[in-house]
Length: 329
Image (tube, rainbow, N blue to C red; front, side, top):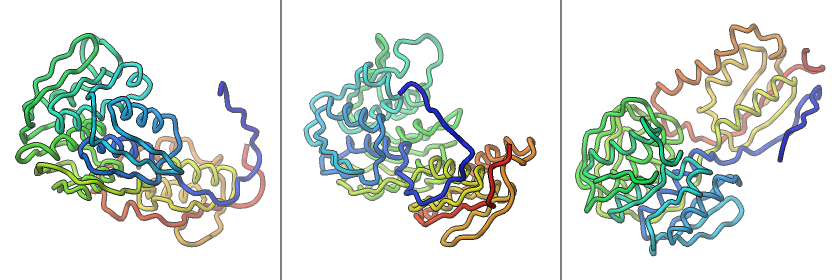
């Protein structure tokens, strides 16, 4: 697809189901490398990155079976803990294989997302964290080579908040010996979803949803059947589109509590947003003062600072409706 051609001026209306979150599905699929037991993930979005992750896992020897919005994975016979550049370059989330492979197999060879680079790399915090847990890591010809008989628990402070770094180290620590504490950890709902999946597999994790996550390592993890959380970015996009066009849209399986910041700003703009009910809204986003342009982004950033609770994954109908008439110009 070379371009999107959009002809506006029409209010959006109808009902749409919110798909599973890609940013939750990818690390959860990588977590299948932590166990030899059957592993099933449902509510998986149909996206290229998901197909690439399946291809990457199959490249390692994982048996994969895809069906409608679900993937069944069997990592009982991984033949090669290797993530080649040709796959990693198309999907940066491939780095999420590094922690699970090192933790379970004692070795991993994963391409750097940008190939061979000089200077600071975007995955340096992943590398430093694994080194703190006792891994021996070398970087040769654009590949990270990690080795460890068994990772050891450690206290790890991350200089900057990193979602994939938090996820990678949390997965690795689940099979490490002893206790690992991740400080300045990411608090996004997708991190919480991964933690819930790992806990269902038998991992001992507490503090997920805060900036300090504690993991007590176990010898092995069991299989799981886990449903991926709904995509809050997709849901927010539909809400904004409904309000901007003065439409009437219902979202099903929406991550209601994760959309608090977006809903608040839409209401300020004149839209009515309500869970489990319909209410009319008046006004148009096109009349929103420019000072609000960055307000939603700032509100979402503030939302990351609060503790994310399990209710954030509640899946409820969410309705956005605005006044009739053509959108403001």
